Each structure stands twice: as C-alpha cells, then as structure tokens.
Image (tube, rainbow, N blue to C red):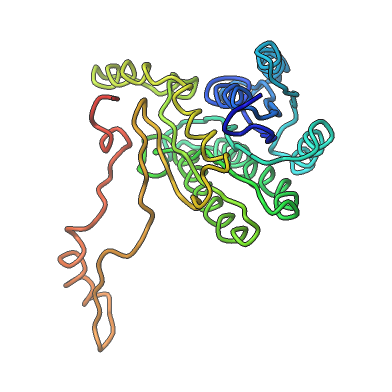
Length: 304
C-alpha cells in the first residue's frame, strides 16, 4: 500500500477509540502495518474490554491494511516488551511509536487521593516510558525510528482539577526531549503533540457555566481525525530533522510551542538576602510573570 509511511511498522497505544483509533487508521491508510494497543478501559481506567482494539484491526483489514491487536496494559514494563515482541514477530520491525494512551481522574487538588495521582501518572508517564524504552534498543540497532507522544495544553498551560494530568503531560514533554537528545546520534526522532479533539476526555470536562457549555460545543467540531495527519507526518521520513519539538493541533490549526528559557535576570554583586529580594524581585520580574491561565484563556478564539 503506497503512502508517506509505506513499509513502516507503527505501534499506537490507546488506539481503540478517539484520537488513537484515528491515528492507527490513517497510519494504515498511508501504508504502515499497525499494532493497535488498547485495554478497553473506561475513561477513568476501570474495566477491560478487548472489543475496541479488535474492532480497529478489523476496520483496518477491511480497508486493505495490515494490523494486529494487543490488549496488554502499558503501565506494566514487561507488557511493553511483549507488545514490541508481538510487533516484531508479526511484522519484523518497529519504526514508529505513538504514545497516546491515557486516563483521567479530574478532582480539585485538596481532594485528590493518592490513587487519583498515581493511576494517572502510571498510565500516561510511566506507560510512555515503558513503551519508549521497549523500542529504544530496536531503534538504536536500526539507526532509525520516530516517537510521537501526546502531551496536553492542560500541562503546557494549565487547567482546573487536573494537577495529576498536568504533571503527567508536562512530564511527557520532558521525556520526549530527553529521548530526542539521547537518541539523536542513532537517527531517532522524538516529538510531542498537544491535541485538541472532542473525545471521551473532552466530554468529561465539567461545564457548569453558560460560557463553559458554549466552549464544549465549539470543541465538538474538532474531531480526532484532525490529529492524525501531523502524527503520521512526524513518523515519516519526510519529517527528518524535526526532533525535540512540541506541537499542537486545533481543528485546522497547527501550532509550534516554545519551551522554557530564561526571560529576565537580576543580580547583585553583594549577593541576596530575603529582605533585598522583597525589595526588588516583584518590581523586576512581575511584568514578566506567567499569569495563572487555563488552556481556554490562551486559546480564546473559536477553532478555525
């Protein structure tokens, strides 16, 4: 099958529904053989259902593509190795890893439990590490490979009731950057995408006020299929030279995010005391402080 990733093998986690399914199907349409990974859990991570992963495999095969399913949890390191082995056994290699799987446990921070925290970190951040590490040796031996990790503007900018999710998603940005730095010598690339798409995760966002309800209605036009083209492109050889970057996709818009760098400095030759800082820091840095904004405050125009 011809396409921009023809002949490549892609592993896509969380591929049973939503963004992951759209990515898996476009990967196959563009010529990749796909490992569809999904345990079939609820949005909160409860339960198991092999149906979604096998449904996507069936859809890919019906369209003339090649795919296999895996319903193993990526939160367990041995499972990541088994998923990669299944890919190699079925297709001979792995070229692209899309770390997309995730769950939500939204709750205001002072009510957040340890399980709310650890379960989200385990799936998003630990799961992304487990899968990334499991393919790293293969990528090194091949002298090629591409990682695409899903971050979020909730982490890059902020949101209420998502301290666990924000920490995980910002951690994924750091993981991606670390992989990009460490594996550049082997011809391996690693990038992040912050997706705006109307999925189970967006549908779960509380919307009490009229403004919030209108916001959710606008998000509904941003389908998961809008995220897939950039993901597939970043996995393709055509994206050579792009690594360590953070993108966002919002309907028909694609954004390149900046990354933390120093923006202001103050110094004293005689050093600092708390009192001297109290006298100078706010005045010097205050105009450059990052406001306590949510993602919706920054992206405050209608999707294009």
